[in-house]
Amino acid sequence: MSIIMQQNVASFYCEDRANLIVKRNWGKHMKSLFAIAIILTTFSSTNLFANDRCDLKFNKVNTCVNFDWVYGPYFDQYNSVKVSYDENLEITNLKVIPWMVMQHGHEHGSRPVVMTKTSDREFLVDKIFFMGGMMGEWYLRIQLLDSNNDILEEQRQLINL
Ligand SMILES: [Cu+2]
Image 1 (cartoon, helix red, strand yellow):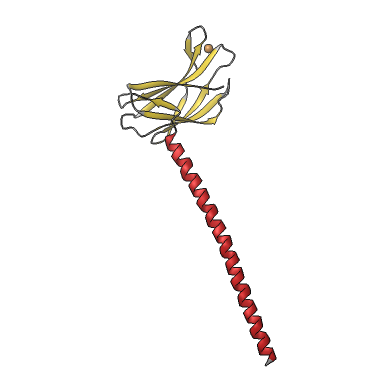
Image 2 (tube, protein in one colour):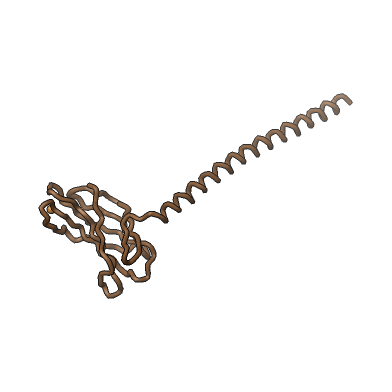
């Protein structure tokens, strides 16, 4: 009889322990859920910011061009940048021209770049060369082109080297 009692007590004790563990685990789960919720909120807000991003505004065509450097920008090296633009039915192609505006007003280009279309509205631009040691500022001239390769709009992005 006393052995059974002890077993019952033991089983009650075990049940309580089990309940306690379940409660503790639930508490841990809640913490995880909170963490996931915070992460999701952070990600969605950064996505909102990403949608609002506009590195270079094109007012006439009403689009934004954004730049994500893959390599560089550095002087006297081949740099690479991903250039993308917001959805726009007019634009079918774009041209990127490294361009220097010198202090005395003279402007000039560089070596030709290599363009690769990486997705619907994104290009990888390789072999961008900014020659150093000159008195002036380097830009990327961005020309948005239509299906006839006519320029819809051109803007310049100053490059911080
Ligand atoms: Cu120059």
